[in-house]
Amino acid sequence: MKAAFTIDDDALRKIADDFRADMCAGLAGKEGATLRMLRSYAGLPSGKEHGSFLALDFGGTNVRALRILLKGGGEYEVLSKVAKPLTLPGVYDYVSADATAEEMFDFLASIIDEAIDGNRETKYLLGHTFSFPSAQTNISDARLIIWTKEFAVRGVEGEVVNDLLRAALVRQGLTNVTPNAVINDTVAVLLSAAYVHGDTKIGAIYATGHNTCYLEPYVGMAQPPMIINMESGGFRKLLPNRFDAALDEVSEKKGEQRLEKMVAGRYMGALFGMALAELMGKAGRAYDFTSIDLSRMLEDTGEKAQAAATIVETVTGEMLSAEDAVRVRGLARSIVARSVRLIAATFVGTLWQIAGSGEIRRQHIAVDGAVYEKMPLVKENLTRAFFELLGADAPKVDTILAVGGSGLGAALAAAMTERAEQR
Ligand code: GLC
Image (cartoon, rainbow, N blue to C red; front, side, top):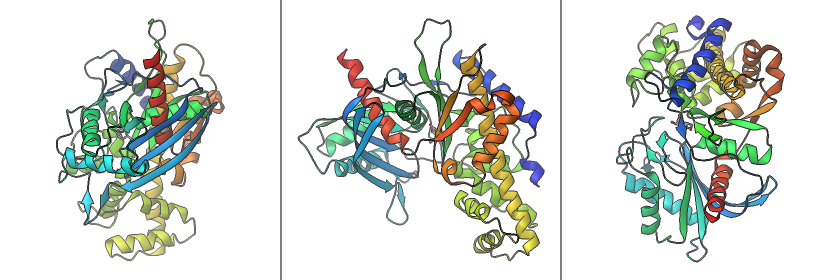
C-alpha cells in the first residue's frame, strides 16, 4: 500500500525535469503544456511602498479583509482585520453551487465594510487576492478561467471578478473603496516576502490548494521580469495511482488540477480515506478524513500510534490493533511525504528555470499555508528532496514561512499599482 505513494530519487528527478520543460512549453504557448503560466503584470516591490491600503484575501477556507499601513523598508502594520469562514454549516455557504456570484460578492463587500468600520468618507485603494486561475491583461482586472479547490459558486467563471466586486461595493454603498489590483495568492506571498526579506523569487501556497509563482527573468527577450502564476496545481505529467484516479473521478472538475489533487490539504484526507478502506478490506469506500486528521496522527510519535487508532475509530467506527494503528500512521506518513516530494520537485524545476544556463543563486522560497506551517514532517521531507535533487546546491535554497502574506501582498499590489499610475 505504501508503495502506491512512494516516489524514488529517479522518478523525482524526472518530475523536476518534466516540470521545467512544461514551464517552457507553457510560456511559449505550446499545445500540450499543462501549466497555464498566467501573467500577473506585477514585478517585485521596491521595498519603498508606503501608505494605508485595504486588502481582501479570498480563495481558501476563510476570507479576510484587512487595513494595512505600509511603512517602507519592509515594515508594515495591520491596522484592522476581519476574518470569516466561507461556509458556516446550516447558515451560509459561499463555496458550493447553492450560492450566486452576487451573494458571494455581497458577502465580501460586507466584510470590507466591517474592516473599515462603515467609513464612507476616507478614500481607499484595495488590493484583491483572488486565488484561482485567472486571465489578466493588466494588474487591475482578472477573469476567472475555472474554479478549483471544489469551489462551484454560480455565475463567476468567465467573468471579470473585479467588476463583480466593484458592483457589490456600490450596492453596499462603499463608493469610497476602489479595487485597483488583483493578484493570485502565490503572487501575494512572493510580493510580501520580497518586501520583507529580499532574495526571494518564488512564492507558493501549501494549504487547501497548492500553487507556485516565480519571477520569470525573460533572459535575452527584452522584456522586463514579470511574476508568472504557474497554476502548478494543474501540472499533469505525473503518474497518478488508483486512489488519485478515483478521487479525480468524484471531484467537481474531473481531469483538472491533477497535481493539486495529489498534494493539497483539501485532498490528502480523502486519499487517506480511500487507501485506508482498501487496507480494511473495504475497497471502494471513501471515508471522510481531513488533512487535520492526518496532522494529528503524525504529531503522535508514540509506539502505539494511539492518535491514529482514535481518529480512525471516530471516522469509520472500526477499532484498530496497535499494530494496525502503526501501519495506518505509516500510510498517513507516506501520503504526506509524497505530497512534499512532488512539491519539492516542482520547486527545483522552477529554480532551474530561473537559473537558466547559470548557477542557482542563494535564495528563499516563500511559502504560506496551514499544511506547510503545521503538518509534521513537511520541512524534513522538503530538505531531503532538495538534497536528492540539488546536491551541493541544496544549502543555497531554503523555504521560509510567509504567514499572512496574502493580505500584505494585496496591499503591496495596490501600492505598486498606484505608483505606476502616478508615473
Ligand atoms: C488553487 C488555485 C490557485 C491558488 C491555489 C492556492 O490551485 O487554482 O490559483 O493559488 O489554489 O490557493
